[in-house]
Image 1 (tube, rainbow, N blue to C red):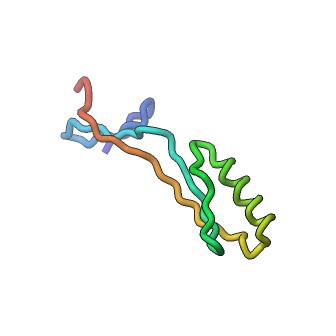
Image 2: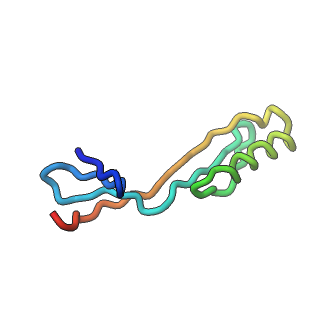
Length: 82
């Protein structure tokens, strides 16, 4: 497997396919005590982090443990130009 540094594309040897990210990564934070969730945060998770601190401040420290889920969208395409 080769990674093209300039583009971040992954090229499998002998294959004419390229895997690339489609959009910026996003994340959501969920309180483990009550299940409340932040809104989806884009590339910078600062908004989700601020939500978590404010949620713990308002609900007490029993609302201070969170599950953070991060995702990104990938697409496989035909490789251009040999």
